[in-house]
Image (cartoon, rainbow over all chains, first blue to last red; front, side, top):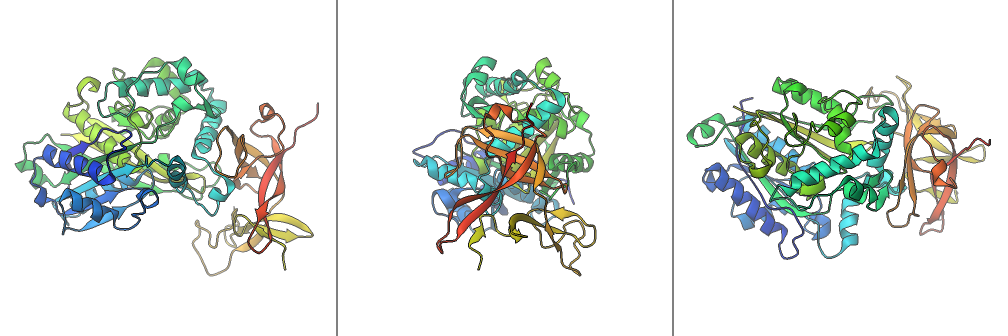
Length: 387
Length: 138
């Protein structure tokens, strides 16, 4: 396998777009990434389109990518449709990386888009609920907020996390989102506001959950040859790893532990090297569990981390400088690629008001999707290194 | 002919006049699964079939969630739980008959309850599995 570099990134602002279609959002993100990379559009040799729910929202179940790329103007090349629930975007990145690493192509594009606002909230909620095993957990009434609340409850009981510590993650991510022009929510919130907002699934309150959203993000990857002729700062995708749920035994290591170990090993770094991370905070408190599962801190240490400001911009390991899912928003198919986009901006020193300083060298993205047999169905972890 | 169908396919069966949870056991490593699997993912050996395993009716709450929202057709609060069955299997299910939700705790003992959720188009009862907490009386 040969080294793979991120050549260009782009995204739309995340939000509620009544007047824009999935194609409009995709067009904007794809062309932003093309312009950012400096390549000529017809140099793209392969494309992957990530989307989770358009089949249920618009009825376009099949060939979603081809219909979107018709709008973008890129036709003829191999186009693949990628669906892995909320990890669809990172799955597309995984495959674009593989296409270049294998030597099959020199330039590949991963595009992710989602449009969940459709004027019918029940339709959107139904679409989201299909990311579980409908025959089994679905028929038992599984609710994602409930799954997260159970994980958080166990951790609180084991290590003494407080409700205030849970709320602080939402406060931090809203503080970060307030600095991000691409974020869906740009308002700040206080610990009291978070704790007093409507209870969803104890201890998860409304302001700890991520909003429904529309948006798109795109990432172009290429080989060293291509990079060397572009006037682009080198960001290498040092590892892109994806694992799937197992029917785990009680006490087994979880999917994030398993996947991150593989990611660190492949990149040849340790968790201590990571300078900035984008994490899948579908509900904000889960971010605390992720610090530990990713080995960024020791088990039981995450509460102190949030109290001491370690993961705020200005701390020693900022997490979700973009605002994360809780504030930047979570248009499922776009999320994983928006994480990569944010980290590339951070590594290049182009993140504006939310720039992590000193400019980071090692960045980690963690994106999860769906639920099967009690685990997140797919988890992707990518490590990016500025060279 | 049975007068009922399991809401979650291949999960329930009749044993000595009772409706019980039916899992499967690997003939090689003896690991128990619920819901039943057709092949043990640890051994991946199809040379002998998985054995049917009738599970006990008891377990403990590993974790639970009292949700103030619920999917269509489910009551609010919607109390989801992971139950560790005596056989060492963790099952996703719902808690019912809990009274005051403030009394719920992790590691409470629970007992299987077979619950009717409706009828199918052939007029058969649709049955599912939930768990009822056993509160120790003071």
